[in-house]
Length: 437
Image 1: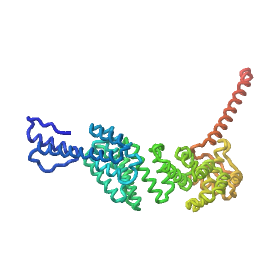
Image 2 (image 1 turned 90 degrees about the vertical axis):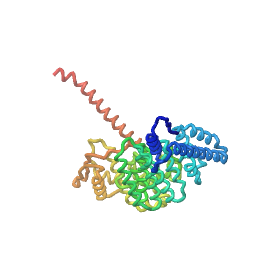
Image 3 (image 1 turned 120 degrees about the horizontal axis):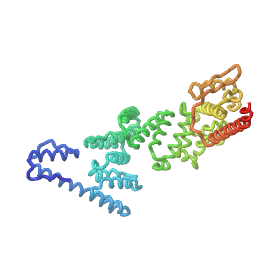
Image 4 (image 1 turned 45 degrees about the vertical axis):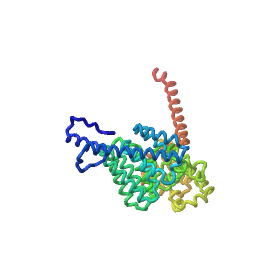
């Protein structure tokens, strides 16, 4: 790190090169120095002192945690060799160690070590580190202030792609605002974030994930179940499930399950049941929720009622489920109707209302209301014939199929193949007579 100043270079050129050197590094020198060489070497001596302080800090940590000596030696070695990429990768592993998850250890690491080279590493990685560090501040305002300072440093670099790291940091600021009860500011940051995302290309998945996570938490706070469900699934689309802790996966799986059951116009549970995160419910005290999802997906009213009876105490402990008991019953009846339609061949989609009434345990009048509800939310298309007491279904909304539904489809396909084979044999048998005539 230095500037080569040849004897033939004019004083003016020296000054220009010197100022540009520090300008690129976010250091704005407004006053013309009397001696460029003197100031340059003075700055270099300051840089040397900072580097020495960083190494001394690592040494103090090594003495405090001798069991992590190899880690500190590796960090010091990479730092001295200025292998910034390798140092970044090592730091990612280092900050995940359990010893740094409590207290202000990461805050101290940032201010005493990372600050010396923060703008030399990948700026999005810097944003990742900054967000992790911010979570150790006990006061939300202090955390927000720290993140605002990091954003200022990012802007001072004048790099072309600083929108990504800045957006990533702002999403953490939005979470802090939400935790403080400031939904208005959180919403504003989300809206600004959406505009930024729409204007960018080739965006890192972690930036998308941060946006959709904040969006999901915003809607969760407002008990907007359908919006939470959509945002949370999009968050998972940009996140590796393996990178999440077991407790985090369980909490998210539980929230997703409740929102799927309670969300308006959510009638397709196949996508959620196919996602690996939902298996986090199995083997826990809330395992019953997984089986309720299966019952809804299959439109199995009898199974749902049995689960409600067996797990009544657990269900009663969830106020949202208790308050929406009738809506849940209506939803599973609609899914039962869709299962009836799906299980019938396409040429047999004129269904007696009495058949639906028997499966859903509803009166004929309530079956008609159920059909009208299904038509209004565009789950099906068809015509109700009150005179004949039937409904003709011409279209049913596509669904993500479960294993049993796929098996049913396979059986129907086997039946169709058998009919085609029979027709082929019949044609072959009649061909000689047709030719002879």
